Length: 305
Image (cartoon, rainbow, N blue to C red; front, side, top):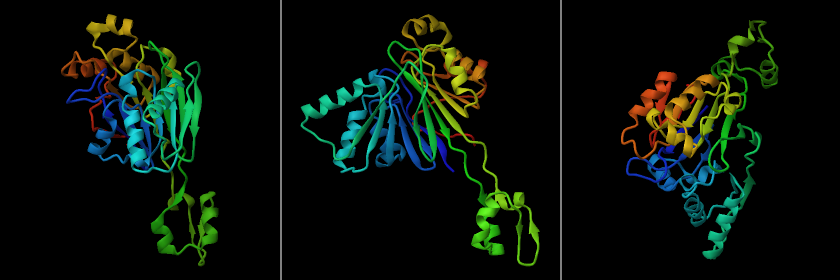
């Protein structure tokens, strides 16, 4: 079952020809979740094969423009495409006001319900729980209120191996008994052990998203053991003083968080425009946490694979 993150924008501040600003899409069993929505996000969706109409939930970490300036355009495109199903937006309450002003000035009413879910940066809380995933928001340390997000895949169900069902023509009444752990005994009295005929689901996967934040050890316990951590890495070691003033992280600090949280892998992004080539940032992060990759626009990472 699919559990993958696609980077639509990996830069900071303003878009360039190489990098758009922050936006990720998480695919959980072909259900799609948008995380941040910087300028140009819908164009990136078209370019990288993400169907915007399939997205039902969007999570905006904070209200600096490079994390949400693409949202009104995306919503308006959905409206023009006559979307009917609800769109759930998780963000700070001021964003609802911003959207309403834009709609009022344009004399526009969306063709679909926009369901707003206000975030609270003062605490860690579950903000979504459905059949496939649970989503928790948690406080980050930035110049304005900012939340990170932790997506946890729901425990996958045990399944009987299809080839065994076809080969042995198992009666329907046996299905639940087998899923409950019982060995199967066929009409001739031959016993088949449960372990040999049932697919045991793998470990549930998780994706932690830490957007703009200073080095913040408080997140370690929240994201501990995540399959993949995305963490901003705006600056190199030589600009740690600037990172401190601007409430951002260096690549090394992002890697320190990954190491302390014992995550499976780290992806760094949100690179300052001063770095034409992020290889310096990547190398500094890898000195602390070797399993680090660079966020690149269009990159899809299969999480937990």
